[in-house]
Each structure stands twice: as structure tokens, then as C-alpha cells.
Image 1: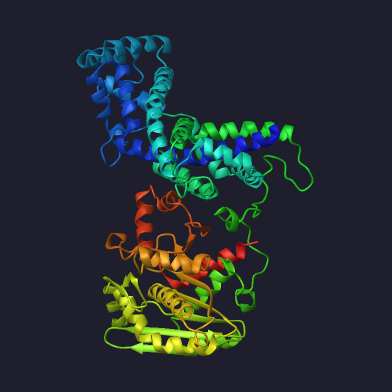
Image 2 (image 1 turned 45 degrees about the vertical axis):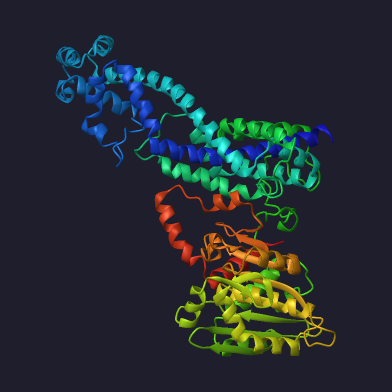
Length: 623
């Protein structure tokens, strides 16, 4: 590896530090805000400045200072220099500074009297010295008090940073362990993967041109003890800015971070501990430090590695690239909208694909959403796409199974309708959430209500598939309850076809793919293992950000999921099998108002129409 390639690997490592530091900074700021660290630091600084608890108490009891306190009655985290001077002089003159402003002698007398009452001999001496130096000029007097306060603020910044460093280290260690961010592992992967190195170099170039990121980091880098509460960005909004920046960039870290298949064994624990320690220490330096370091190193890189044809110079802010796709790295890089994608052209569907394809995810979700429509509309749409269609409807006191089967020369699609809140059968099906023995595979247990709903439609569904599956790949899809029925039906078809004797109507059946969206859990661990063993990469489970239905029934009841996960994050990006830390980060909110809004989305994120829209937008962004 050349020295320049090593430099690129180092840049990639620093990019990881930058993104994780943004998360750490945001979490520490929330901690500081909850604890009131900035306000406490300023309060302690004024105690040292006044050398009098009585004077400090009178200062904070002044109406203009009380107006700065938040609703939790914490100390204000920031006091303007001019406001400090005016309030202190007002307190030291018995709230008479405005009327005594033109009389230096009376100001001195009032200061001596009040200062003795507060036991603030040091402040009396300093203010009397300022009065003499100001020579009767009240404006000059205030300027001298302001300069005195600024000196104290600079010292308070140092106190605050010392307190902050321990918090950054503690939170940095938690984030390091949560993401399994091992510096040694990350660097070894980057040195071995030229494509990944180039991706991160391009990501750094974009980050350095991101005005919102530069803005929030510049504000933090100033090191103020606190932020202004009079027209300047509030702490909460800044915390959210750091978190939003982290969310924009964190998707690119999924190939390097996470615990999937990376749990240390034996001696590897020793090196992992060293790697974690290095990361935690690096994160404690803060996001502004790494942003500044990347700026400097990218300038060095630009001078050592001149741009070649087709390469954008470092720092030039290239357009987002899709050179590394979700298919081979686990994440989808941001991309501009494609010039033209016809979302109504079924010819784009790829029935020959043996693994996840975004276009297939879109079309299967379209069929899943279509299952909620009337038979007439389903027929019209299928005919427009060159498909024939037949319907299955089983309605009773306990079930309400609605399925359509549509086919062409190339494929056969089974679309299962999800829960209709107006149908009591669907509600009862969902409520029967106990696990019971699977009828076609006794070694596994599945959701009792889902099995009952499938059993009601199974004879008709199997007969349709037996009649039309030959020379066609079979695709199954559904949303919500429909997704669970599609999973059970797909597994049952595989079991029965693979055990069928030669000449049986199901013999030779080929399942091309099973795509479900917003699907609840439908079986135990044995069922999930069996399902993945038979379907492999052809089983794709699409989950939208805060959709709560995929979290039910609870895992504590013995349920588990199976299949490749296509996760749609908060920004509408599609991520393949994201690690747990990324999904937690994607759902994390620090602003209480935003959190309340996001909680409302937990139901809205389940809609089939929303799934379809988000996948359509993702397909337009795809290269």
C-alpha cells in the first residue's frame, strides 16, 4: 500500500470519528442541558468573581436575571456582558443605578453601603477603582465592568471544558461499545478496501462543504460557557443540528460498525479493548476537533495527490456518488434523482433475480398496496400490465382472508391483503397471537390467528397456484397481516412442493421472491431458521423507520423475524440489514417537540401507501 493510500485510510478513520463525535456531542449537550452544567458553571464563576454568596444571590434575584431562567428554574446558561454590567451596578446601588447614573459620588456611596451589606469588599474595591478610572463617565464605567466580566468568562470556559471532557469520554465509551467501533478493525478494513477508502474520501469532501454542519460545529468550537437566549440559536436546536448531521452521515458507517458476526473470540478481545479505548479517547476530543483535522489533512492530500481526469479535487464538493451501492456494502449512498423512471412500467420488474432488487421491492409493495383496492381496480391495473388475475375471498366470524393471484408468461404473483380495521375477522385474527404447532412443519410454532386465516384460503390458493405456476416463478407479497399470510403461504408452498412426488401439481414449483412490508412476527425461532434455510436471500422484509407493527407480537412471547431487512430510514434512504445501533440512532430524537411528533408517526409509518411512495422515491434516486 502506498503512503497516499494510507493517508486515505486515515481520512476514512477520521470520518468515522467525526460522525460518532457528532452523536457524542449531541448526547453530552442533552446531558448538560438536563443537568444545567453551563448555568452551574457560570453560577460558580460568579461566586469566585464576587467572593460573596449574598451578592451572588442578590444578583440572580434581579428581575432581569430571573427573566433568563428557563421553566425548570435552572440558572441561566448565558448572560450578556452589557446585561451583567447593568445588573451588577443596579444591585450594588440598591436598584438605584438609573437615577444615580450622573452622580459618581452618590454611586460610590451606594456601592460602599450595599457592598458592606453583602460582605463584598473585593467588589467594592474594584468598582471604586473603575469609578475613578471612568472619571464620571457612566458608559466608560460599564465598559470597565464588562471587561472584568469577560476575563472571568474566559476562565470559566476552561472550567467548563475540564468538566465537559470527562462527560465526552464517558459518553464516547458508551457510543464506542454500542457501535463496536474498534479503531484497529476499522483501519484494517480501510487499508484493505480501496473502494471503501475512496467512498469515505468523497464523503469527507461533501461534509467539508456542508454549510449546516460547518455552522453547528463552528458554534461549538467557540467554547462559550453558554449560548445567548436573546436571538441566538437555543441549545436544544443546536443539539438537534448535531444529531441531524450525524444521521445524514451515519448510514455510511454501517459496513464498518456493529456487532453482527464481529464478537471477539480469545486473544481478539485484547486487541478489541485497545481498539475501543483508542476510539473512546478520540471521540472525547469532540466533533469540532475532527472537523478541523479533516480540513487540514484534506488540504495536504490535495497537494500530494493532484486531481486526475474524472476526479474532483479535494474540497471541491463533488456531486454525491453511487459508486458503492447497498448491494455490496450494506448501505445506499445518497444520489440525485434519476432523469426518468417510469413507475408504471412493469417491464422493469426482474423475475430472474435471486436476491434483493430495489425495483422488485417497489413492484411487490405495489401489489401489496393494490390488495387493499376493489376487485375492479385490481383487474384494471393487472390487465394494463399484461397480467391475468383471479381472486380469493374467505369471510367468516373468525377470518377475513382476501388474496389475489395474477400471472403472465414470466411469473405468478400472490398478493395478500392486510388488516382492514372495519373487518372484525381481521381484528380477531391479529388478537389470536398465541403460538401453536405449525400444521405443515410440526417442529415449528406459528401465530394461531395467522395460521387460521391461511388455512381458510389455502385449498383455493393452492389450486390456483397448481394450475398456473408451471414455467413461471412464483412471487408472494403482502402488507401487515397480508405480509404474515404471504410468509406462511410461501413456506407452506416450499414444504409441500419439495416433498411432493414426481408428477404432483406442485412439483417443480419455483419461488422467485417473497417481499413483505410492515410484516408482524409470525413464528418462533425454529420457523425463522427453516424459512431462511429454504428461501435465503429471496425473503426480503421491508421496514419503515418507526413502524411499530414489525415489533409485534413481542419477542418475549417467543416470536422472531426472518429474512433480509430492507430498512427505510428517516431520510427515506434504503439500507440493507442495518445494525441495531443505526436503527436506534435513526429513531433518536432530542427535541421534546420533535419527539412528540415522531411518536405520532409510529402509526402513520405503517401505511401501505407510504411504503409505496418511499420506495418509489428511492427507485428514482437509484443509479
